[in-house]
Length: 168
Length: 357
Image 1: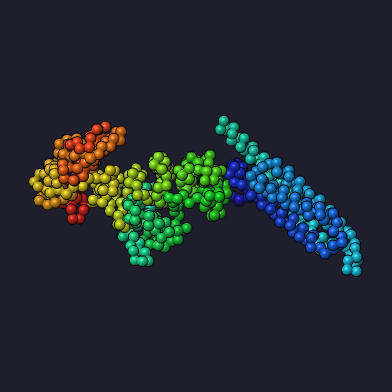
Image 2: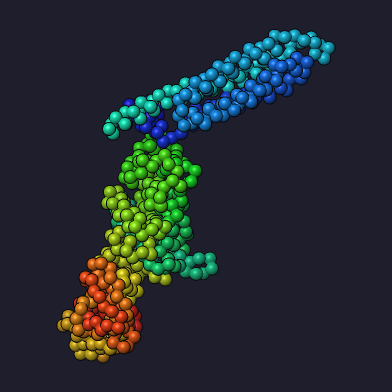
């Protein structure tokens, strides 16, 4: 039988495994999201358009990145141990990554300035595409992690309850 | 099914020191063999050669008829349990037990089934999420055994697994190993220097000294019919008493005592008339009587038994007797003992004198 076709017994064993095996998949997805966030902010802060970026907006962006990394790291450790409530935090962080696309990259891409005596978009098409891809991948990783963790935690809770009932 | 055959195995180290000499043994499927002997006798070296951790200098090793002398350790399908557990401290008990199968990239569900089954056998189910540091020595050793069980190897190898445990835990874990063997019906090789472990666990014992096999047999055979003075002195606690005696007619004349021989014993000693032999008497084969007069030097009450230590008369020939019941001999008292069972050894060769001579 293919390893992708799961029987009822397989499903039961998979649920029982969760009692002893860490939720590494969800945790690793969080780390992946962190990695792509790093790609994003490195790309952004390398932009040589000081007059556009040197505003309170960039300060807020830096602070947000720090907070984001801290929270996502904390979440990665907690989802590893099947903490259901952290699914909501991870989901929120994922949604925020989508929102961020429209805060700096899209606005910079739509703004035209005279840079080095040439009128051009603050963020060119290629850089904009890369920034969007980084944020989308980061967001997707977080959302998948959140959904997966929620599903697994729910299944684990139900399994533990059924075990307790059997033992009682 | 796993039958192991060791044929003419030698171990010679690079510095030409020979640790094992011409070791021969056929282990039947499901048999528990205990290698026993004092430190440095070559028992652990032999086990490590079977495991593939040491090269075999000469001889052949067969597993189920297949020559595995040159097969690397990882391909021998044997699992070894070490004295110091060798557990990964940063992993949980579950992860420790699953580790070898994870390395083999087994299906996670299959791994889970095997780990849970092993944990059930060893009573570790409630400990699976703990780290080794949170367990007692006995539990850690059970984890080490569990790690072997999940691999379902052809042969289990135990290298003094109980040496790190205190006396009480050692007894309990020993019983668990015995139950495990009965349950798994697996072929096991077990190394120990503790003769109590050897006698209680083994289907057959291999007694070794200085790299040589002294005797292979069931625990009763080694206890009751030791091949030589070494085996007789090593097996049994307290050890056997040995006396130089002369065969004169129908009696044995020792230093300060004379013992009558039965017709059967006389027949056994046929050919030794007038010669000196070594007489062996187990402490538990002494009873209160009148054959040997002993000046008591110590009296130890063990509850059901009493150990009486003394000298034959004023000769300085030492006697250790294990008498049934609670005795109260005082130092300097004279106690009379009779001998219920005698063992005879050739004085030159130290080999047992059997009736067929």
